[in-house]
Amino acid sequence: MARAFAKISFTPDVQAVQREMGSRSAYQGAEFGAREAVVLGDAEQAFISERDSFYLATVGQTGWPYVQHRGGPVGFLRVLDEHTLGYADFSGNRQYISVGNLRGDDRVCLFLMDYPRRLRLKIWGRARAVDERDEPELLRKLESPDSRAPVERGILIRVEAFDWNCPKYITPRYSQQEVEALIAQVRQQPQAAEKPVLRALGTGALSLTISGIRQLTPRIRAYELRHADGGVLPDYQAGAHLRVPILLPDGSVASRAYSLTDAPGDPEIYRIAVLRKDDGDGGSRALHEGWQLGACLQVDSPENYFPLHEDDRPAVLIAGGIGITPIKAMAETLATRGADFELHYTGRTLQDMAFARDLQQRFPTQCRLYFSQTPDSSRLDVAGLLANVSADAVIYVCGPNRLIDATRQTARYLGIPAERVQFESFT
Image (cartoon, rainbow, N blue to C red; front, side, top):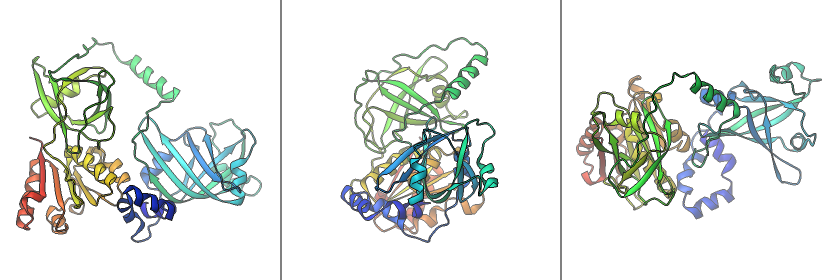
């Protein structure tokens, strides 16, 4: 819903600040194009139905905004149809600020958070109160049989725009119920011999600690690495990789290089993502099975053999599978610069593609996804893509060798100079 969101949010004052900060060109494209129908899709409806709270902003007669927390049973914010939300308004402290504000201005903004998964959804709409005396049937649709709190009214919201926020800087938090469920799950598991914690694995001068592990897809895990002493980490640029030690089953230590997935900017953390390949040489499998929270790694500083250009030429980013890792950092860096770029990401299915939803939400006008195990219309056409790139665009491709070879051969056939085609192979 990029255009509807931009029309509401990118006021002249906002546009002026975007120009001052150099991000105007990255967002300007969202304001043009055909007017889209604002429809809550399957992803939005599922996300909304899983929430047990949200934040609601209204505007009072003084012009000041007012933000209120609303909570209830899971799913108390109901999706009535693809354009309409509603919830039962429970009795609270009886200040009635939000309800009073709606009498003069029906505009609202909802902020929905999923802290464990680091997701957030913003929704703009127009709201009205539902009274039991006038619309008893509609109010009954909003009531929850699981709640004993007295319902004073219903609030109906007609959605006018929505936007997914990036997960950066969201600290994961868990409810008491979620923590209790995790504890119960652990207690039900059979007792096993405790795995030894890896310590000081590797010979590099930089000491890192594994501070976070997150499952991105069934076969891809993200790992967060921090300085073992809590200090600042060496800087790097988009496209850089980190060579890390891995303890193999035979007791030997191997090293593998993995791209840093985030744009530079956070001096306290490195992030990599590793695809487990059971038919590979055993390195990724050993990493998945052996790396544990708290383990210490001795590594060298990041290196970069796949650097991003520094001038203002546009970029075409092409990623296949786990090749998205350096490409993601490039896209984030280009967006921060306000540079012109497009991102083409292909994988087997959406479920196999790390960061796909996040990238599509953060870069709705620049990111396009392709799926190899779907009809031909959903597959990446390298020849068609490169035939339409601008004459000065720099092309970056990372992924399986067949994707890199197809890109290089097609570029050569189209007369694109080799120096404008940068690539990084898994091998």
